[in-house]
Length: 117
Length: 114
Image (cartoon, each protein chain N blue to C red):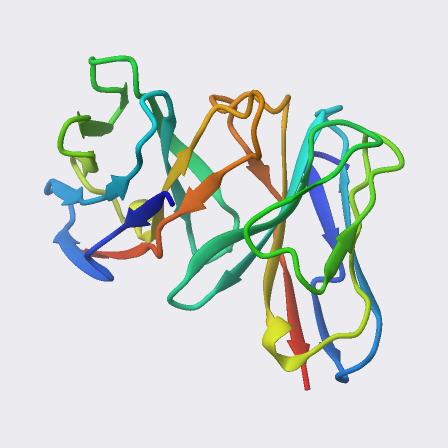
């Protein structure tokens, strides 16, 4: 069965610094998708970034980028120039293509990120 | 309405009671989902619907049922609530079932079963 592990329950970073959140997953599939979602105190889940497993190039979205290591089954999120608004719970998620099988969407347990002013 | 709405925002419920959590989206998305979020466990998929008229089971479907009579609404029903169903429930939708599509989440319903 697929699993997603976020080994850091909480992290802190100084404002304007860079922080990396780790995520590892376990799967026997070769085709899948990976996501990072952000959940601020408002509770609203927001997509931060996504990566297709067949793409070797790491996804980037402004200050957010990923380090996708398929062989190591690792999908870390790097936040550059951290801002106070980045404070939130971050969830890593794994999803398999749904064609011909049950939908599998697996979320990690989350990493709470604190931004220190 | 803009996006996804959920009702109620929060609810305290006696064990054994029936409860329906409502979810409505106005984005004409085909796919909809229900998750529960528990401290230390992240989000877990309860049920999903790829399109109106179809539903499927997720990771933790027991004790829950869903229906999808139309595109916009995807209610989640607890037939006989138990304390272990105390959780925050999130409804989400996406354009279709494609794995790459972003899921848009509602604001959540905090449910407490006593």
